[in-house]
Amino acid sequence: MPIKRWSTLEEDELSSKVGLPNNNIPTDHLPIAALFERKPHPQLSEEAKEKLLSLLTNIENRHATELNTQHEEAERARSKLEQDHLEKQRMVAAESNESSEEQQSTKKKKKKPQPPPEIIQHVRSSRQELKELKMKQKGERDSFISNLTILERMVVQHTFARKGKVTSCTIGLRMVD
Image (cartoon, rainbow, N blue to C red; front, side, top):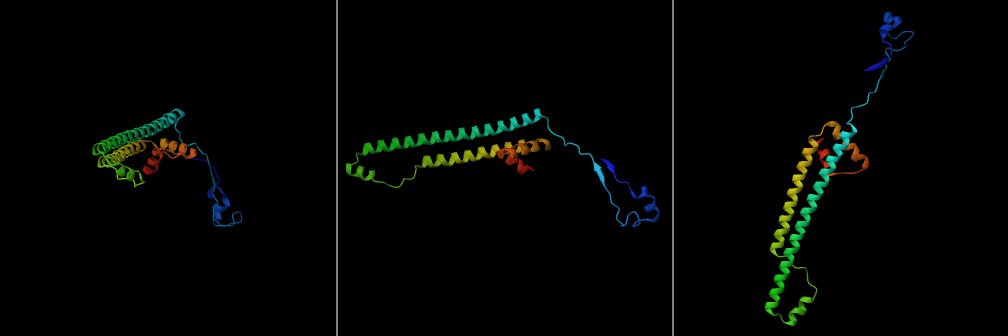
């Protein structure tokens, strides 16, 4: 809403009678101007900001923990499979009583052999599980972002833009906008 403005053509008697241009206004263009009061835009309260950022941090931390846990479990299972495989190889080697000549030839540097099928299958299934977990987390982040109000989205964008930090939730924010 304007708080001040220049007078209109009707308020100038000469211009009202003779029109424009005239001796007072030498152009047929009427200058206009208005002064507006700038009102602050709505903002979230500090309490609401803290709650929102806390929720966002909790999501990020939980997702990171889930990913780390799954990775550690997969590595533990892979390590166990590799140990079991080495144990089987040792047992087979002990039973077959390899000659010392064959043992010396195995000491030469060889290419790394392909892992056994169980380990290959484990790696594939671990990758698939990780992919599924990431898709589930992405869905959760997208849902979180899509349910934010415009003011909440602004807070998230401004907070992380100032810090120069990109999080998985702010990536989702860009996709939803």
